[in-house]
Structures are given as C-alpha cells and as structure tokens.
Amino acid sequence: MAGLLGGVRIVESSLLGPAAITLHLADLGAEVIKVEPPKGDYVRRMTWPIVEGVSLMHLHINRGKRSIALDLRTPDAVDVYLDLVRNSDAVVEAMRPGALEKRGLGYERLREVNPRIVFCTISGYGMTGPYKDMPSHGIAYDTWAGLVPPAYDEEGFCYMPEHPSMGIHAGPLFGAFGILAGIVRARETGEGCRMEIAQSDAAAYMDWYRSETWRAYERPESEVTGNASDNFERRAPGTAGMKEGVRYQIYDTADGHVLFMASEREFWKNFCEGVGRMDLFERWPGEEYADHARNNRELQAVLRDIFKTKTSAEWITWSNEVNTPIAPVNNPQTIAADPQFQDRFPWIPKERLGADELPFPVKVLDDEQPIPEQAPTPGQHTDDVLRDVLGYDETRLSALKESGALG
Image (cartoon, rainbow, N blue to C red):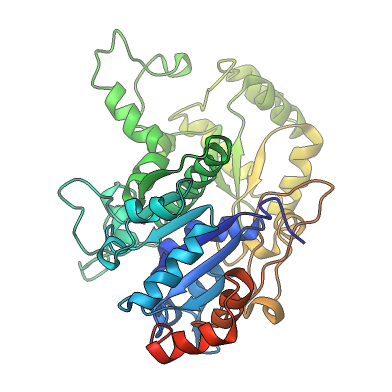
C-alpha cells in the first residue's frame, strides 16, 4: 500500500535518535532511504533494551526505511548521493549541522542538482547560539528546558528522576511538519528551502504554557491575574499550580488511583448527585468554571474516603454513567492493559518488526495504511536502491564496489 505519502522520497543521513524525524513520514508511506557509512549507524548498539542483539531504539525509529551504505569519503559515493537527491523531495541531516557540507553535499550543492529539494537539519542545540557546537544526548534538551527537576536519594546523592523524554520526540515531530510544508510549497513553486530544528527548542516549546506564564507574571497584577475562582490569586504555572487542588486531584481507589476533574460546577453537581452527597454541593457549590476548591482540606478528606469505596475500573464506568470526568492513572508498564489503549493501539507484532511496537497514532478513516517493515541492517538495500531507484546496471554496480564507494 502506498499510504498518504506515497510518491514522496526522502534521503536521510542520520545518527542515533534524531533519525525519528523521518519515522513518522515513513509510517505514512514516504520512501525513506537511510544513507549510512559502511559500518552503519551505531544506534543499533545504543541504550536498552537490546532485542536479539539490536536496540529497540533502532527497531522503532528506523522501521520502514531502506538502508544504503555509502562511504562519502570517496568521490564516487558523493556522486551516488547526488543522483539520489536528483529525484527526491527532501534531504535530512540528522546529526551535527554541517556534516554533509564537509562531504561536499551542502544545501547549495544539492540545489544545483535539484532546485526543489527541501533540506532539513535536526540537531541538539541547533545551528546558532553558544551551545551549537556542544556534544550532547537526548535528556540534555529536557534538563536545559527545565523539564527535569533534580532528585536526591536516601544517601543524599543527586540523580535523574524518571520522566517522559520530550526533546528527542517533539523535535522530530516538528521537523516532520516542516519538511511536509516545504515539500508542499516546492511542488507548487518548484523552489526548495533550507530549514533546521533543535531538539532543545522543541522541548522548550512543548512546555510553552509554563514559560509563557512566568513571562506573563512579570507584568503587573493589574494586567495579569489568576482565575476568578481563586479570587484572582496567581497560581504557580502549569501543573505546579495543581498541588493544592481538591476537585481536580488524584485520589486513591480500592485498588489504585484515579484523577478526579470536576472543575466545572455542572460536573461537580453530577458527582455529588451520583454519590448521594448533595450536601457537599450545597455547602461548596463553587464557581461555574475552573474551580478546584483549592486548599479545602475538609472536602478533600471526604473525597478521599469516597474514592476508596470503588475500584479504579468501577469509578471509570460510573463516571461515564453520571457524566463527571474521572480518568485512569496508569504508568508505562500498566497502560498496555488499559481497555482504551488496547482499542486504540494494536501492537505491530515482533514477528514483523523484531519487537512489539506501537503504530503511528494518526488514523485515516476508511483507508488502510501500510504496515512498516522491520528496521534495516546496514546497507541492506544498497543494491536494490542503486538498481531500482537510480537505474544503475551491473557494470556500474561492480565499478562502485571496486572503488570502495560502497565500503
């Protein structure tokens, strides 16, 4: 199946996690040709788990791609790269900026062979700024962006707490948006473009609500206040301001936890009616919107006891019946057992991809999309790409092998 992006071809030069920038495009049917050095991208040996000798990171972010091995230190390999670019829509430099320029494959050279090429560089800190040349890994972008508060163990040693990785995932997503926008314009006008995305920028942007709130709080309180339900008191930005909440809070259940979210008066009334405690509503009706009943410890103690009377699953079913928002509280290990997860995320099985993996989350209604193939071994598709994509004959293939261009 061609998929939504059938007919789009992308040449990718990448190392490690930034290669995820084309994962999403490959999942939607784009042809992604991953150009690797003869020894391959060492992502295959990086981080855990290692599944039958290959990292899960490689199996996931490079699924659906084809690998061609080229030694770009040789002129013949550079010529092959340029031939690939001639009939492609985009080139991705997913490594330190300027890496392709050093091999004679910078944007201006690529434009000479394909004026409509979209060239995207994705890197850690981007192409400008005092950190642009610093070596780094993915978590650095989250610590830089203020997303990972340092923690301390019982012996007083500082450590990195568990947290969702933001920059290494959001950066590739934003980059993929940009690439598609560039391709749309290039196909309309014939003019390509050059763009870049820093994974650190993406991490900071994904947390815009907190940083923009702090920025807004620099203005006088006559201009920027809190909610009316809080008597206009300024809360701490983002989820930090949720700590004192009562009608919007996590509660223990008989077998786990749920998140209670009755911040609207209507939902709060429905809850009180459903549990047979209209006295709670009559005593604390609250504001119409955005009322968390902050710091109401008396009410919080009552709710704590109420929520312990049912299991988490019972509360979820009950909330749907009475129309009040209560959500499951999962962790990365338990979420796979959640019925909503099971309905929305049919695992792509290990028999196909080498490890059980989640599918692309966008669903195209009434149109079946392609299922990705397993991530390639280094240079797995070299001969196929040279024959099928570039039309090289056996004489040209033999010459390239003898010259060392293919490693």
